[in-house]
Image 1 (cartoon, helix red, strand yellow):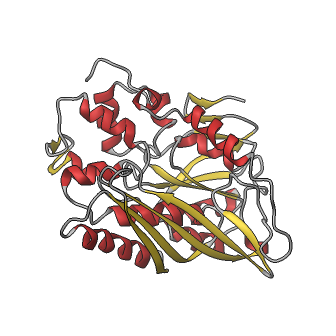
Image 2: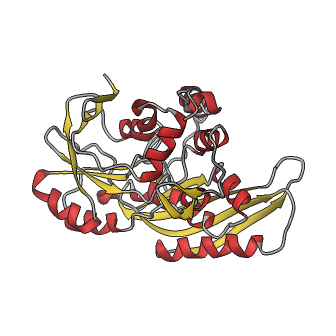
Length: 335
């Protein structure tokens, strides 16, 4: 252990400051189109929705973040394309929307052999898993701006207006089903990298919890794409959905003003236990930064909960209460 209690903010990412910046940015966005293409949701939900007649079109945009620095260290780039697709697609799924198409943006410091081929390999794999087409993209060489590379994308989806799930139907007594994550996914890597930097380990060292792989390879496991959520939406009465990304379980505040009592959470992956131990990170900081083993949550009536859990490989992890966000006895947010 480092002997410190490392935090996301100390590592360079302050969620509260980020929220202030977002409010300042979105506060300027006052113009709204009317008629076809008019917005159907306020800025701030998982995906932006616009009027398209009988349907709503949805858009989400996101990137891989500083996980790309670990890919550079390992000189292995064939999974970050999956992350790029997943972070966008999962945000559409969190509104019950099927992804249709994707465009990517790759910014480079310089061009190198085999790099672009590996990026493309991950992108096409993510698109195949999401049952959608990559219809275009952009590449920019920016040596004075980019150190290494940055990868981002935008996803387009479509849904009938009466099938949009934004959380307004969530009610007291609803059950919460958690779906296991594949690991750290693509959030919190500024803290991850700080922990490894201050530890005795390198990314090339065997992962202590599974010596058959390295720490770097464990951290490069791509983000799970939760396409099975669409099947749950079709067969169950789903009231709310949540993609757990940056800021961890604080993301649940996007779904409803009601609270979450997660009395039986999914056991965190070994990588979270390792990072927490090496960084001396508190339980509260871990749940406010990472998905901690639950990458996606479904909120629905008790009668449909077991079916949803079976369809997704998940389990019932909690229930909807009047206020706050709690994991067992740990209060994540108190209202």
